Image 1: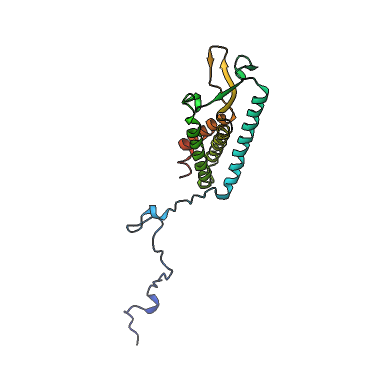
Image 2: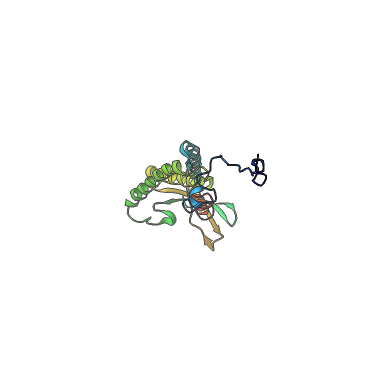
Length: 208
C-alpha cells in the first residue's frame, strides 16, 4: 500500500541539463583571454605587381619632361624670356649645373656625378618602395610615382648634358622672380606634397 504522505514520483520537478558545448572563451574577454587578443589586426596588402601601374605614371612624367625640354632647347634662346602670361609667366631657357635653386652650381664639375648618383639611388629606392607600399595608399603611391618620374627626368639631363634644362619662369614683373624650373621639378614638388599629406592625415587611418 503506497505511503500517502510521501512525495509522488510524478510531482518531482524535472531538471534539464544543457549538453551543448561551451565556448572556450567569452567574446567579451576573460581573466585569461583579454579582449585585445580577440581583435585581429587587418592584413596590409602591398602593391606587388600593381606597382607597374605607378611605373607607367612615372614614365609619363619622364616623357612629358623630356619632350618639353626638347621644345625649350629648339624654340627658345638662352636667357631670352618669352612672355606667356604677363607679368607672371615667361618661357626662359636656363641651365642648372647644381641642385634645386642652383645649389652648388659653381662647384667645379664634381657635383654632376654627385647629384647623378644621388638621383640614381633615390630612383632605385622608389622603384622598390612602390612594390612594398600598401595597395590602399593610393595618394602615397601617386606621390612616389611623381617623385620617381621627376628624379629620372633630371637624371637624364645630367647624364646627357651635364646640366638640367629649365624653362618655366614664374615672376611678378621685375619685383620678384622664382627660380626657373621644369616639369620634373614640378613632379618632385607635387609628389613630396602628396607624400606629406598621406603621412599626416591618412597613414594612421589605414593602420600602417
